[in-house]
Amino acid sequence: MKKYKNIEQYPSQIRRDIVRMVHDVQSGHPGGSLGTVEFFTALFFELLEADPQQFKINDKGEDIFILSNGHITPVYYSTMARRGYFKLQELATFRRLGSRLQGHPSVHDGLPGVRIASGSLGQGLSVALGIAQGKKLNNDSHLVYTLHGDGELQEGQIWEAVLYAGAKGVDNLIATVDYNNAQIDGKVDDVLSLGNLKAKFEAFNWTVVEIKEGNNLEAVIKGLNEAKSLTGKGKPVAVLLHTLMGYGIDFMQGDYRWHGKPLNDEQLTKALAQLPETLGDY
Image (cartoon, rainbow, N blue to C red):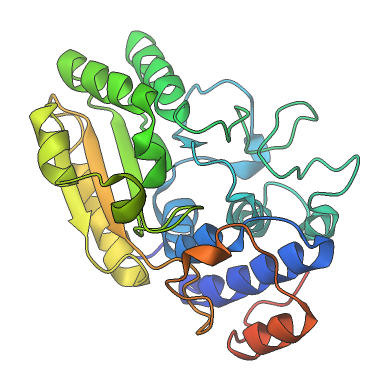
C-alpha cells in the first residue's frame, strides 16, 4: 500500500522543476537528475522513515539519505521541497548568489534535509558507513540509504568503503548505483568500464538487487522494498538501478552530453510540452 495516494503525479512535476531550475540560471546538471526521478520519488514518498517537519542534523530515530553524486541537486531539491522540507518557492533561488540551494549540497546555511556537503565524488559511501555504524552503537534500527553515479564508482575510495562494509557486515546500509552508463565524458563503458558490477559487489560480501526498469515507479518501489527486506541479515545491500539519463524528454534521453548542459529557451518549451503539470509549478 502506497503511503502517498497521488505518488504517480510526482515524477512529471519533479521533471518540470528540474528543467526550469537549470534553464533559469543556465547552469546545473539535468541529465542524471531526470534519470533518477523515480528513485527519489520512491525513496522520499514511500520508503524513507523521516519527518521533514522534525528535521535535525543528527541521525537519531529516523532513516538517513546521503546523496554521494552531489551534482544532481535539481532532483534532490525538488523532491525535498515537494516532500515538505522547505517551501516550494525556494526552488526559484537555485544556484543563485546567497541561496541555500547551491549547485552541490551544502550544510553551511542549514538547508533541511541535507546533512553533508557532497559532490566531490566517491566520499558519500564512507560517510554513510560511519552513520550506519553509529546507529548500531546507539541501538537505532533505522536504515541508511545512499545514491551514487556509475561513473563515481571509478573512484578508489568507493571500493575501500565497499570492502569495509562487506567485511564488517554493515547490514543497515542500502547503496544504490544509478547505472545509466553515462558520465560527463561519454559512456561509462568507453571511459572506464565497470565490468560485471553485480559480481564485484557480491565478491565484496554484499547482497545485490537489480532494478531493470529504473524509470518505472512501480518497479523501483518494489525493488527498494526488496532491498529493505534484505537488511539486517549480515550483509550490506547494493541496488543496481538501470536508468536512462535525461529520461522523460525525447531529445535528452540516453545522451551523456546532457550531464551538465542547460536547456535553451526553445528546448525548455519542447521539454515542458512533454511533461504534464500535475501538482502545480513553483
